[in-house]
Image (cartoon, rainbow, N blue to C red; front, side, top):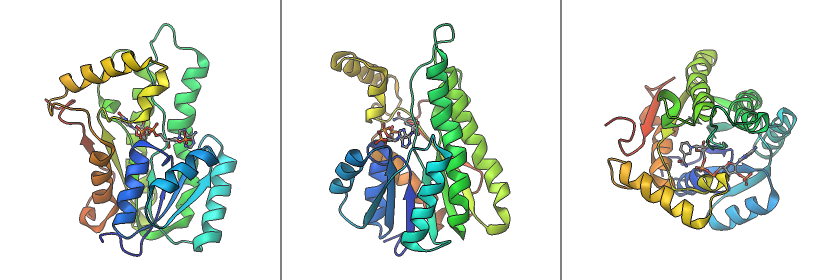
Length: 250
Ligand SMILES: NC(=O)c1ccc[n+]([C@@H]2O[C@H](COP(=O)([O-])OP(=O)(O)OC[C@H]3O[C@@H](n4cnc5c(N)ncnc54)[C@H](OP(=O)(O)O)[C@@H]3O)[C@@H](O)[C@H]2O)c1
């Protein structure tokens, strides 16, 4: 029960890493609020999590919806009561330099960068002094991966926010750190519209190229988020933990 009595907000927790982290946080004694873009995905996620979970429909692309989410959390739990904020909502797909259109560029930047900025702006006043914030970046924030320029740039911005927001919130002892997953087996790989066969081939190829010999699981990341959320990581701020089976390191 490493998070006994804590209140945690996780954006984008209807599947994948966010959902696994919500389950782990609940197992560790936290009360958790999860968000997503629609009621039905949230209802399915809530049914899968065994423990105290509240759901809120809120699209991170809308600063107004982020403010309304913050208002509802204050009504549910009181002002200044959030102990943990895992800013996890995000999208990922390739953006070839010569063929990417404006809509795809905007979607990546609107969710991963603008969405994160206005989530944090809305949530910062709800955080307790000494709270922990974890941002979900990606291993490719510091590599040159052909065909992934916009996604990589968006996640480099996320990495940067961990440093600047730790500085912004220093007087309140709020720590902001980043987790940078490698290739994790979640529904995010379905966003490119591949057939099941193509998807299986991509995953086989990825698993073969990862030093650890497999793709990561959502729980591999949730365990690191738990560490960053709790007191065990108290001397870390503005930092990053890369959890990628050695992919970007070896
Ligand atoms: N999987 C990987 O290999 C990998 C690697 C590096 C980083 N990451 C990062 O990990 C995070 C979680 O991704 P995942 O792999 O767990 O993928 P996922 O299973 O597709 O989860 C993405 C979550 O984000 C939510 N979401 C998407 N757009 C949203 C929006 N505009 N507003 C609010 N919520 C939104 C989705 O909920 P609804 O669809 O229900 O709205 C879903 O719950 C992302 O930031 C991703 O970039 C993943």
